[in-house]
Length: 334
Image 1 (cartoon, rainbow, N blue to C red):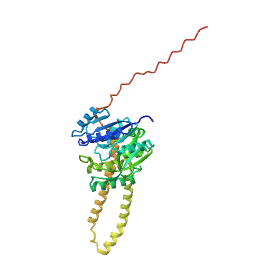
Image 2: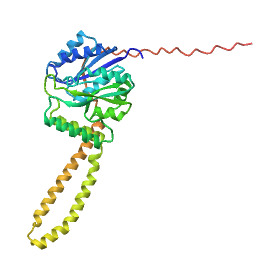
Image 3: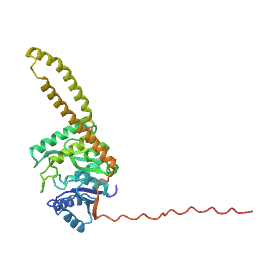
Image 4: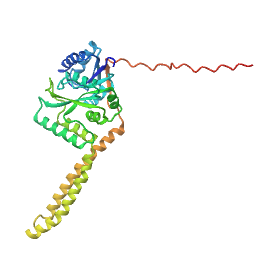
């Protein structure tokens, strides 16, 4: 194999306190990898000095590439844009908060050279996170593992190395509500995991508050499972059985305790409230799937680039250089 080329993709959102340290650690690691490399950063609508710092690095180091979104499109879209602009034989996704150690990339490269096409990082421990975040993350990964049709490894994030053929396959999948780690598992290929301890953020605040965590979980579940729709039939069956069983029970209780037990209006109101709650919940679930269909039908671009820095200008199409077919020579006359 010729000298490999590696691409590192790092989405950036208000990470001014981490950018220089991320750059220094990436340089130290990748310079020892024995291959050429590039760092593709995607500024996802940052409101701090992140873009300015990235462009300063790109001006000093040609290996640093900067994509600047026209607005904030979200973490998964930023990762997608970075993948679209990579050129490496192997591509690594890493967050800029340094919770995922860049030093682990060297071990990923060794697994890739051994024949694995996807090498994902498995979080054995998570430092610097609240008990609520740890609990919800644990529940989410085990829930998504059980109800989806794809075998998504538990306790994994987007920190992973992918072979070029895997990246090319991902680029062909342009769905809007993206769950990168699920898409990577769906694609297949030869995959393996590496365990590590996830550190606390180097600086700054988490970019996944509760609201974004819930939305992210909904994208993952509705993108890879029909279980929320399928459960409707089971709930409706249970409610039907309870309704049938309630008729003789209420009749007996009224005979024993008197006709005033559980007045008719009260019983009706309670049942209607319960059924209405279930109906509204399942209408919400159906609405999530319909909203995903609507997003895909509109067929808007996944992102809009405001500016680029560090990328080579795209060459214009070269003129057709295929030589014209020679005309047949005239036959000699006798």
